[in-house]
Structure formats: structure tokens, C-alpha cells
Length: 266
Image 1: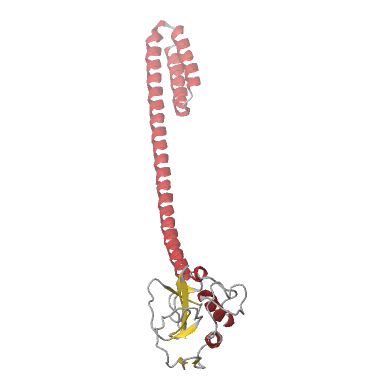
Image 2: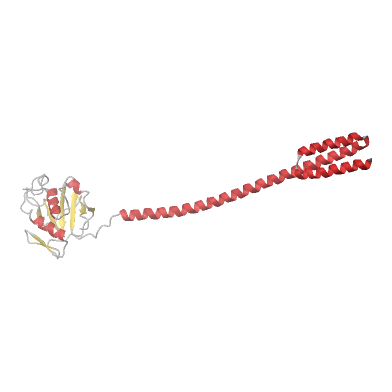
């Protein structure tokens, strides 16, 4: 009879081993019920059943604890892998941003260089009578090597040498009986194809490009006065008699307060 019970206990223990491996708590409860059944069959088996139950529970708790620890380690390892992958992505992003910033800086520098006008070399203020322009006391002439616009401008200025000065004249129409400082300057530029319509001294403050030109320079004091120099010879309404209009001037004058500008390319 005892052999039968030990066989039952052995079978129960074998089943528990499989239960422990499968981590099935529900079957373990059924197994505990089977142990109780064995213990009830004989009083002598109670101690064996109790010991067996304690062993089963202890082993089950150990397995569960080990499985939980392994699960926690797996989760920690997975999080470490995810963090490492994230750090790699951040490093790649930072490298891409650095390249982008370099490209953006190069693009901005290129745009500034394109937008900045390149002023031609400033021509010296030559005295009347040089290898580019000649003045005989009334009319001016120039070398045929000068740009055709400069030649047309000088010829137009020669036509104004007898015109009187009238403030505001020459602005309503290009061909007029008198001219002021800005309309006489406008007249010569229009005849040379370098201006479409007359400007005032304020308008000339934004004409063409800033700085002295190679052949033509317009000297502007907005709201007060404007005159021009062509190859060093000055065309001006001031510096002569009262009421005298635009004339070629050979005497020096002050340039203080005047800003130089010139037609594009001239």
C-alpha cells in the first residue's frame, strides 16, 4: 500500500516539474488538491503530503521570482538599446544641421556679394583741357574714343551755353527757353539716352550709382543744388553772373556737402 502512495507522490512530483516549467498556476492548484486527496487516504501520509506541498510552493515561488528577474533584465536591456539608437539618431541630426548651417552661411555670403554693386574706379577731377575733353572758352569737344553717350552729352551741353536761368524751367518740357540746375543736368542726360524724364535735385539723390563715375559725375545736394562734371569739365548754373544759366565752368568751386553719383557704367 505504501508503494502505491509513493508511486502517486512520484507521479504528482513529475507533474509538478512540468507545471513549474510551464509556469501554470492553475494546474498547480489542482495538484495541491490531489496531494490533499492522498493525505486523506491515510493518516501516515499527512506529514509526507505537507512536506511535499511546502516543497512545491517553495519551488514555484523560486521559479516565478527568477522569471520576473529575467523579464526585468530583458526590459532594461531593451531600453538601453532604444536609448543607444536614439543617441545615434541625435548625432546624425546634429551632423546634418552643421552641414546645413555651413551651406546657409555660404548662400547668404553669395547673395550679399551679388547684391553689392561694384563701383567703377573714380575718375580724377581733371582741369579743363586734357586728352579726353577740350574747351575753347565757349564750346567743348571730346575724343572720339569716348563712349557715344558721353559724346552726345557734351554736344547737348554745348546747346545750353546761351540759355538763361529760370527756377523751375525745363521741367515741364525738355526743350525750353530757360533751365535751372536740375533741368539742365536732366537735359544733357536725356539727350545722351541716360535718363527718361527731368529730375529735381532730390530725385538725383537716388539716380544711378553712388560715387564718382569714369566719365560722368553728378554732384548732388538734395533740395539745394546739383551740377555735373564730364571728364573733369564742370557744367554748372552757379559761378557766373546773376541770371546766367548752365555754362561750362573752369574755375574751381567747393564740393562740400555734395554727394557724387553717376550713370551706370559711366
